[in-house]
Length: 580
Image (cartoon, rainbow, N blue to C red; front, side, top):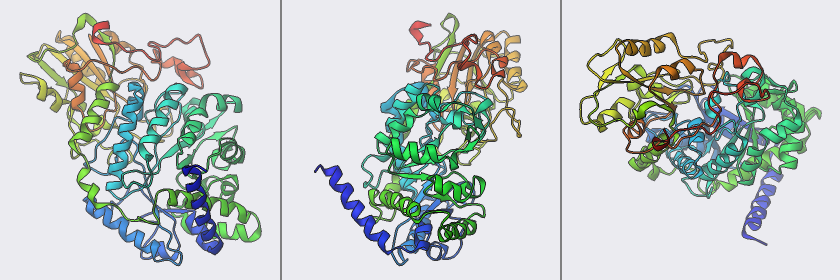
């Protein structure tokens, strides 16, 4: 018997022992995930026998990492004071660094990592994210997103690595490996592959919409990253908001139980997404295979009481409950929480370390994609007379996108980050002017104009949805920046900060050089390092690039199904200085 199999059998025996002693209330408690604020108060962790806590948008556990750890420790002590003393799992949406904690290292969003196509770098980023997440008290991250986006109207394109199944598979493996490592080490966390399945392939890119893909298409195009995650031992998989053939994924037993748990042999936790119980069928989602429920925003009492009644009446078999609890306990044992349930305070000083930021800056450099470089205007000379144009040029919040400090991101600078302008001024041997309003600076020879999308996250970032604040083209204000400097006769370098490919065909024609920077995160300096030639461009498009808004009249945008629609640039395109 191998060491891995022996360890598995030891854990299973411990789970058997616990399950034999558990009441139905204790089992349902283990299946419950709540926020540390609003959903609970006082000694609710103890009295309601809660199994997991989530931190998300809302009141912070404190201002410092020490205070965050103290909050986690207090809640953990409540859990350990229960009859069976089962420790809590603490989950957080750390999707590009520990992005809920101001001062942590924030990496480029996954779309940028997809442009790097560097699995070693993705693994390093995940490892650092895990360490800084544990340093703030959390042992479970809801990452990586392994969706494969089919339509840029979807507001979560940036959370995914690529439209390429092959690239997504390779980087999924690296991310899970980096996050989890040896789970019993205090610097590692439980990872979550999400959102199962079809979140990025809904018709017309609607968040939580229906996907009309056939099951064969799902298996061929969308399933391989999940198989890769399972092969790497991923601890959890999150169900998706979308429907498949008009069946809610949360209640899709054929895909969750039969396919994921059966054919793929996934032995971890299937966790619901936000308010999964009340939104997607209550006890139907449990019978479909959901193991842990985000019982948030008023769902706690209804979930626990409703499920207990369903078990009592036979609507939900007790065997289904025991299977769910077994999966939850299995991951708690794998994490070593029964032996070491509390955060490691020695990790606090490692948050935002210089060496962590150096890896993040490397990720920025390798994510940048050069689409145009006419007359080799790039790389810039250190003594070039430059004006950096636009509010995005000196704002770390705008350059980082959603899921940064706040759920929907921030439009302000945040602690520990370096802006693009700061990076330019570190490298240039002469003063770099800054024209925030794009009003025009006639003294410079070259205008580096930073344009793009203001931060957004799920639902709010959908194009054409109920909250229609975003578009597939540049805003009129950003277009005016470019027009102003063209009228002044300046050389134009456009840097696009975006969470998805945008239709910028006219702006590419207007510019002398065009750079896609995606959402670089906290290390804006990395952009300057490449534009000044300290490093060459390495990034390649993780998505084919659209040429026209009309290309999005179909369900899946310009990149799928219709061979007559040709992209402006193909998947994998990206210039380098000596190829330009």
